[in-house]
Length: 244
Image (cartoon, rainbow, N blue to C red):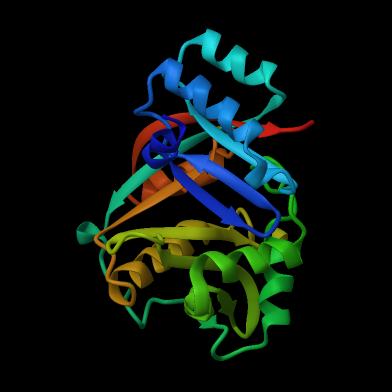
């Protein structure tokens, strides 16, 4: 039974972390059994960060049971979906910034811009440091990570990052692993344009037919970007992190 439960959900594994997603179709009993298995599974004994995403549709008794196992509420997140057929291509003459991949630049530049883009984020704090984050990208995406890690430049100055890719195990589901502007570039009406650039890359280079995104319920600017890009909210989930 436990093996079949694992098959009903999605595991995302990286450097020192594992996250269980797509639990919405489980019954309350299955959700509780899954959380118990996740805690007791010796396969994950040495994993530093264990996270489970719990749909807001589950009963309160289920979330209380999960908390009783040692999981702590970390954040609430909205998931959205965006069809890429409606995304218009960015006019080259209207483009104000250029996105450069790791095929053209040093990893140190990208990592530093990414680090700065996470400063003051309205999403819940990351449990991984930058080196662990980078190892996670390489592990999850394989050699293609060099085409996913894009630094956005404006007038030769790095202003942010956008990381489009095809979700592993799918052929047409696009995702943006991370997106953000460095602190001094926020509030200047650049976020929507940069995110649309990422969606265009998903469509034109990665041949995705749709995109799935997620952000904290507290990240109002990112929710506005989703709205501006025509994304539709699909579900709200609670994020629980295990701590012994």
